[in-house]
Amino acid sequence: SPKDVYTLMYPKMREQKKEKFITLYLDTKNQVLKEEVVSIGSLNASIVHPREVFRAAVIHGAAAIVLTHAHPSGDPTPSEADIKVTRDLIRAGQLLKIDVLDHVITGHPQHDKPHVSLRELGYFYS
Image (tube, rainbow, N blue to C red):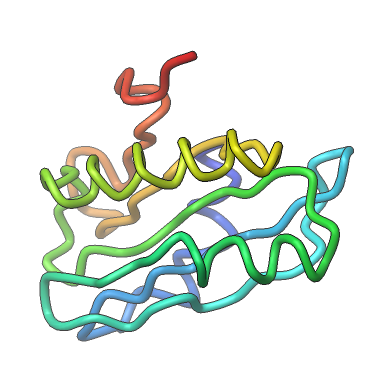
């Protein structure tokens, strides 16, 4: 669940000054096989390419992935770039038959919403 992703990732991301884009690689039972930093960006941007995301998924035999990153500002509201990269990665995953289960953006626990799930916001489609 998005809350599980937040609980797992927030302690690792809370003091970050730059965006770190992390992928969780999952087995067929949605257990984490591996966690990998795919990209480190600037204060408010991260460049992510499907090649980097799915290379490790193939190597580790992942059945699915969860995307996650933190907004150093503490506000987890997705940017247009977050939405675009999510949709690009969903399409790439469809070609490889590796499900992208969610993209969870973490913010600060004192924010109205400490995390946001792009799936729950309706950005995933069939």
